[in-house]
Image (cartoon, rainbow, N blue to C red):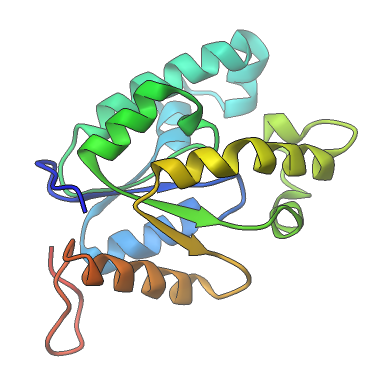
Length: 189
């Protein structure tokens, strides 16, 4: 396990629909840390949704803004950050995440991802004739990159959010990133 001077930030990576935001919020509550979602932070600052950014600036413009946001957020200390699904495509993002915290890959198979995202219109990459096929292609492209970047891989499957958060916490405790509570309360930082 790498040592970090960033208060052992926890960064969640994975494809859209893997549960990064939902699990990240639960994890941050349990760790009593501030939670950030890089896509939501971009939307808040720009005043528009991600699909609008894609529409006006294309994927390249969005990825540039995303890289700036990840640099800023990963520079904070003691946070839980859910990154966008494509954040790992840029070398500088992978490097910053690995240097500035613990990276957890929430891994889900393409079928489960499709079930979770099929009605979501806020996913620009899935606005195609074949969103399921697009998820399969993205999974094939990105799974090796996520694996290479991650300190831990957590299979999301179909467990509850609490179960997934517990699994991530257990991995962090075993690695010494957080201390296991002695009395059954929240883990300490």
